[in-house]
Structures are given as structure tokens and as C-alpha cells.
Image (cartoon, rainbow, N blue to C red; front, side, top):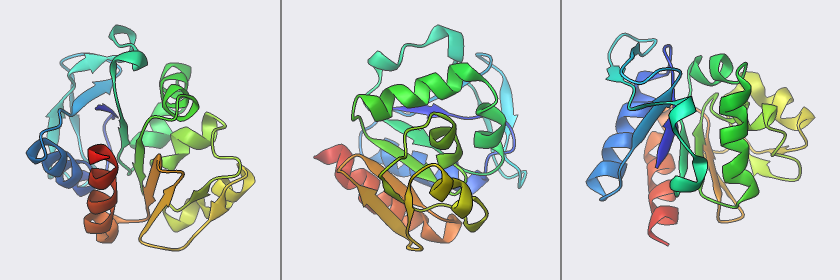
Length: 168
């Protein structure tokens, strides 16, 4: 699975799901602006090394997309390469897992019209303006494809539903 990420990600929203996915037998490959670059979480609890730069990857080669929250998605959505990469997964109906601010990439990709989603409360209006129906729930699964959650408190439900989709 591909994970789009850069500095200022929400530490636990990357580390806990990634650990669960790997324990479930899935590979989580981090994709950022530059291969080998170290990026740090906004809490300073996690530092990760980017596996691939965005110019080195093809979304066809990945079966799922993971978008952790924090400021990372907002930073990445300013770069069309990350937006188009995200759009591919939605257009191809591949699994997409977005927590907290993660859906910001999907908003910019214009892929949420008619979808049921959740996310951090500060992006509720953005989600609604993108045509989504916002649900204030710990996890929302839409179309057996898109799994969204609101905050680090929702991580257990997010992991449960995204893992279920990976095993389907």
C-alpha cells in the first residue's frame, strides 16, 4: 500500500495504522517529495525515512492508499503530483484510508462528491463544499472503498475497518 506523507504528519495516525497493516501482512511504502528524506511527525514522536519520491512511483503498482492526518495532507495537496496520485485510487475504486486531515488530498482531487465521509471537525465545511455528506462518527466506510476517521481517538475503529477492507 502507498502512504503519501511529509513532515508534520500526526504521529500516531501514521505509526499505529502502519504497524497494524504490516502485522496483517501488508507492506506500507511511504511516498514523499524525495526518496531517503527524513520526515518528522508534528508531535516529534516519530521520524520516518521516505521510501520513494513521488516522481519514482506509479499508482497502478499499489493496491491501496493510506493518508494520515496532521498538516502533511495540506502541505502535499499544494503539489499536483500528490493530488493526481490520490485521484487515481478514487477513480479506480481502490481502497483509500484517510484519517483526520487526510481527506484534504481527496478534496483537492475533487473525488468526494456524493460520498459519505468524516474527518477532523475543522475540515467539515471543506468536505461538504466538496460535495460529501459529513458524518460525525468515529469511522465512516463508503462504497466498500473509502474509510475515513476524525482524530487519533478513532484509530482503533479506523484500523478495524480499513483492515477488514484489505482482507476482502
